[in-house]
Picture (cartoon, rainbow, N blue to C red):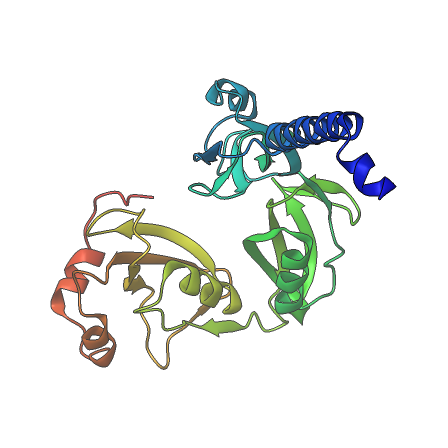
Length: 284
């Protein structure tokens, strides 16, 4: 009976009311804190930041919706120094305000790599070593030497580059190679229908150099350009000196039937001879 009497007393009811009010206030404070921390309901869409300079990020985010963090930098001469090339989250994503945006920018200084030792390697081995090092094969020069297609010297702008020397990533390395004692020749590769990248690799593998390039049907920016004509032309018995430059004529596969061209290789269209014999300068 005493417990029942206490529960009905004014003191207990008063304290109970105070406790309920305090708990309600505490719950309200907790919920408001959570909302402030998570910015509940304040979603924003991530815009495209690629193409902006790193210093423009804050200007572009005038509402202070994001927190930018530069996590990496790369060197690529196709972009401007300091330009944003990658971002995470990607453009169009919906995120909370204050979300961290991780961006990758183009380094302001070129990436340097060490020059490998290519001497005495075959041309194919040397090209592979250059790719691994982040470099590219440049002009091939041949001189009479018993070591056919072996690297005799590695140069940049006619200057020999010693192994271990730091050079800019992507630099073209010119190679001097041997012809063999009999000044041997190489076969002309069949390039018709190839992309420029495919043709470049075939020319290099044949111990030849890339010569002038001419474009038709849309200019050199088209990714669908393929080899329409080549000089020297291809014949089964066509041999030339190693290091000979190959001239290429390219046109878009959107406007030309390359399958028919390849099939008619033994009797190419007469217009090809007319184009090759034109005197106008190529578009490079």
